[in-house]
Length: 250
Image (cartoon, rainbow, N blue to C red; front, side, top):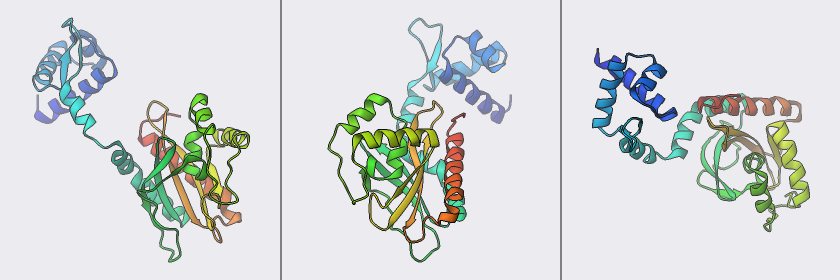
């Protein structure tokens, strides 16, 4: 067996163990390899800590070496790495800045932005955290939270950033319902006067909302009302592409 083939088979085997721990025969059937090959690979992987046996000694599961490697990865940087090529394409499509945000408590935290070429543009919000109810990234994330979590959020005193900021709990409940059905949210000068933005949610392989993709620009030009539906569609489609790259199946 060649070195590259061995690595490929070992990786396939690790994926199978991660999905469902099992014994040698079970795993051999799952990956469609001879039992002797799987036994040899498991022995090697066990020796380096990539897999380990359950206490009963008959079943293999992911080992401490893989767990250590996984926990050392910054999940926000992984998300940004996956999303960045799609963000670059979206900047070209909408001709405005595009950013990425993740939930942190009751805020959204901006982890990356790609600017457009227009000389007049909105500042880079990377590294900033804002309450979920004042920005579309926060609203699309909140719209996919469990009802109990949403109610805890709405039970708090919500700050009004501009005269347009929606802070009434009943109005926000209705708004979140529409966002969940539509798959996107627009915010028009609710966080800051002179800034409009649109966002769509990002989902991982388990279907959980893990962040949001947004585009924003100066209110005097964004959105051009004639292009608003087109911009919305492009943001939603790009977010869906990022989610698919993260393993989400619609």
